[in-house]
Length: 171
Image 1 (tube, helix red, strand yellow):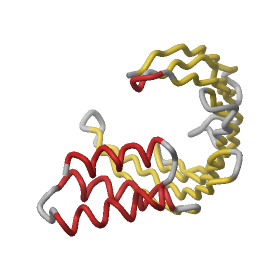
Image 2: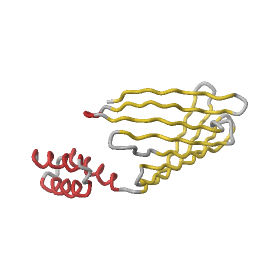
Image 3: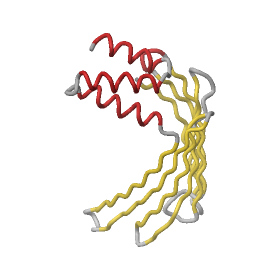
Image 4: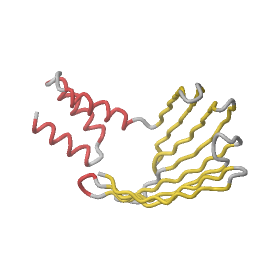
C-alpha cells in the first residue's frame, strides 16, 4: 500500500489524473476498507469533470426581529484551457425586498506558479452591490504555501463605493 500510495502521489503531482484514477481504483480493490483512498478517488473523479452545475439555498432566521433571510444561487463552472470560468446567479429575499445578482469569475493560470482571480458582478437591487469587481494574483510555493495580493470594489446606489485591498499568506 505504501508503494502504491507514493506512486499515486507522483501521478497526481505530474497531473496524470486518468492514470492516477486507474491506480487509485486498483488500490481500493486491494484495500476496500481504506477510507483515505476512497476520498482521494472521489477527488480525482471531480478533477476530471469539465463542467459543473450547483444549486444552493439558505434560510436564516434572526431572533432580533424574527425576520427571515433567504438566498438561492445557481452556479455553472466550466474548466477551460486557461482556467476555471464560473457564471452564477443569486436571488435574495431580505427586509421584505427581493433582488437578483449576476456574477462572472475567472481563475486564469498565468504559469505553473501563478494564477489570477477576476470578478465582475451586477445587480439592480439594494440587496447586492449594483456593480462589483475584483482582481487578485496568487503565487503558489512548495509545501502548500500560497500568497495573494489583490483588491475588491463594491458600488452601491446612493451609498458610494467600498474598496478592499487584500494580502494573505495561506498554508
